Image (cartoon, rainbow, N blue to C red):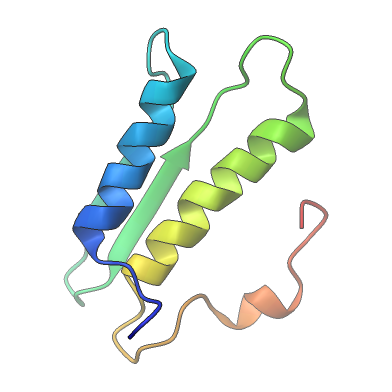
Length: 90
């Protein structure tokens, strides 16, 4: 069995995660497909009261990484060469 999630499962998990937090859902996720057939992902995450930068950065990274896995590049890869240097929030 594959570890790859279906798009519908990723969407359900993301919606569940937003619903659990209660209040107004301020986080947003946008998916667009460009002319080359590549899905472009945009994730906006806002801090909840009492949440640290590390907390909401991790939440944002979770959304983004899940969507990257659901929408790999046309050649089947997930991510890009730039992932070799993940930056300070890893």
